[in-house]
Length: 255
Ligand code: G
Ligand code: G
Ligand code: MN
Ligand code: NA
Image (cartoon, rainbow, N blue to C red; front, side):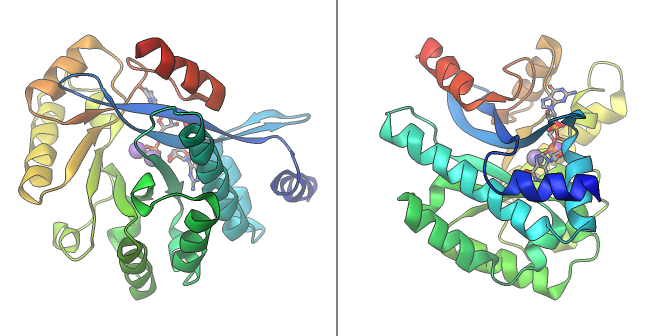
């Protein structure tokens, strides 16, 4: 109950919630393709609360809608700031949880948010975890369609771990697959991980989707995914998720 009070406060004014941003770069030339926003909660007494714990807490106390809206608003606000200052960030990707896609008001919220911050729909991507498609609720499908209709891109996160039927893939307007980091991390040692990586790349390519390799930590992993034609990479090898001001410095340093 104490944590719930703290979360309510954090969702209000300046209560220690923050977004960090992780760059996504082109495999060919290293150019920045976008950034993923990742939630951080520095609790006044507990310290860093892991984002999955925070999301679970928000689900439990009925705050998941507010949390999703907070993340969307913060990401769009920071994106608008980068635009104003001429910092070239092609788009920002936000993670939403399954229950956020059950909210039929989500598309309208996003539409108004973009307008309020003076952003174009292509400035924003929403990531949904592949698990959502395990047993897709018709409401979720309708919401994803409506978000897509706004012109906002939809990305399927943790791809390869969700056991989704591949038959759902072509029923949803998905622009991007994020190859789960559990595969990328085993590339050097595990033939199966390499085979699965190649398969996901092939699926993405044949369906006209971008594939982002997540969790690229080593030169050997980078070399393998790039060599197999993976267009975009993300991981500690390129950069850890960093606060907005550090991201800006990272971009300036490289340009
Ligand atoms: O870096 P990391 O520990 O940030 O993230 C752990 C998990 O939490 C990942 O699965 C990530 O997708 C999820 N996550 C991070 N930020 C958010 C967020 O803003 N909303 C939701 N729903 N999940 C998030
Ligand atoms: O589920 P999702 O893909 O959104 O989770 C992203 C998570 O992966 C975040 O917790 C982020 O901090 C973490 N992450 C990002 N890059 C790397 C990496 O290179 N290695 C590892 N182990 N984790 C990473
Ligand atoms: Mn993600
Ligand atoms: Na992921």
